[in-house]
Every structure is written in C-alpha cells, then in structure tokens.
Image (tube, rainbow, N blue to C red; front, side, top):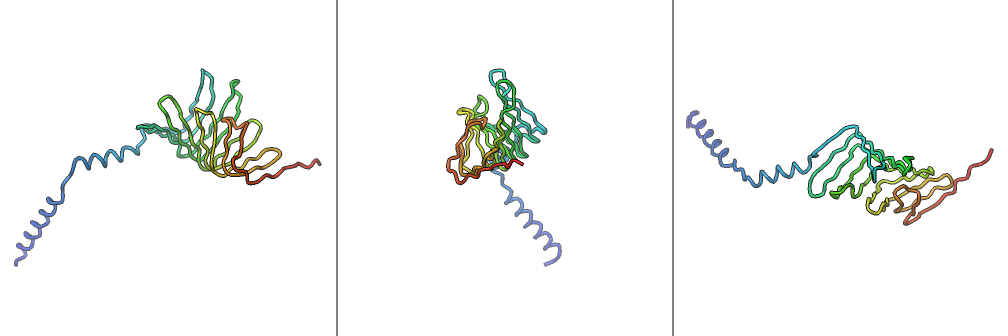
Length: 190
C-alpha cells in the first residue's frame, strides 16, 4: 500500500469515527445543564449587613463577609465564610451575640424558617454566659435554639459540658440534654 492510500484510509477511518460518536441527546444535555444551574446562587454579595425586624422593631443584625442566595423549591441563603449575629431586646439593647464559621438559613416563603450555625459556634448572652459548640439550630417558629452536638457553657461561677442543648433564642434560659460534667469556678480574694 502506498503512503497516499494509508493516509486516505486513516483519514476516512478517523472521519467515520468522529461522526459516529457525536450524538447529542437534548434531554441529556438539558439535564446536565439544569443540574449545574441548581448549584449556582441567584445572588451573591460581599460584606453584607442585614437588619431583621419584627413589628417595626429591630431584632437582629447579621454581618457576613459573603452571602449567597439560592432559589428553588426551598430557597435558602448560605454564609460560607462565617457570620456574626447580634440580637436586640425591645429597647434595642444587645441581648445575645452569635458567631460561627459557617451559616445557612432556610426561607419558608414568609421569612426565615430556621437557621443553622456550624463550626466554631460561640453564643454569649447578656449575663456573659458563653456557649461553645460545633452546630446550632435556631427555629423561628418556636423561638428556640438547639443542638445534639457537644456543648460547653462557661459562666462566671462554673463550666458545664454535655451533649445536646435546648434554649430560648436569647440564651438566657437553657438546659443541657445529656450533662457530662460540671466544674465550679471560685475566685480567690486577694
């Protein structure tokens, strides 16, 4: 066989192979495209400060370096680089401060349904009591915060720890579900 025949045969084979393998099923293409779009935010903002109010009174201020909003059957917002939330009483006094490395909030169509704080979650109430945990959930309907994760609570008099917690949303009244220990802290007068 000559070089020209080999080249022509190779070229013909390559062309047939290319045309036979190029088949695009529009349903497959649409499903791939739709799947990719599900993971894209409809809105993305940096250095966000959001004020939440109830009955024309400011109840909370959320600040975050990044906020992404997602649409769909259950819209949600994600705070992938952390957040700080300050809660206020009816007189605009700071009641509670919450910080976390990650946050996500779910909308029920009428406002925030519940919100989750994850990784290095710290809550400090008006009395100075401090909660440390890795996952905390706030339920907007019941106005409670809870977790099933390990918790450590530090007060001026004691350190408590255990698994799980339920508390009112301002963290002024709380209960550790499965207490593991308690240490009294006494200051010596000098």
